[in-house]
Length: 205
Image 1 (cartoon, rainbow, N blue to C red):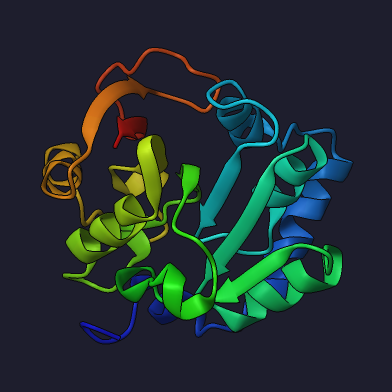
Image 2 (cartoon, rainbow, N blue to C red):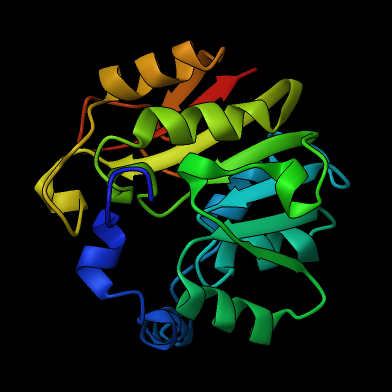
């Protein structure tokens, strides 16, 4: 890795896939709606669009988008999470890679995505110092006019680790990667951003 272990690896040891999946399965059984991220993405691009789930984890968001008719690829560094994703949806494309070193050509896929989604606190959980590289790498995978959608916590109440990235820093990383901010929301239900501790940002290539 470019700057050592990611915050996610430090938090979980890279072995939490089954535990993570079980937690969301319990939430689903309790009646909680787990498809806000997929609905948000589906409102931005039509079915059939190519979607990269950057930091796909166990595949919760991507599997739902595939069910809605999207052409999806998932990438994650945590093999335990990918093992769950591959078990749940073996017909979909799941790739192991560090987002800060993500190279579609090296992985055998075209860099022509209509949308990249980074849900689940992806940017705050990267290895320290690699955030600009990750933004640049995923931006380079977008078609001209494609969208990067990222939702992440900004304070301790919304993160499993101490806050490590501000919105101003994230916007600067995206700008350096050639992206322009087009919208920002407080939730995946598209509530207006109010300066709170969680934000969903939409940038365009």
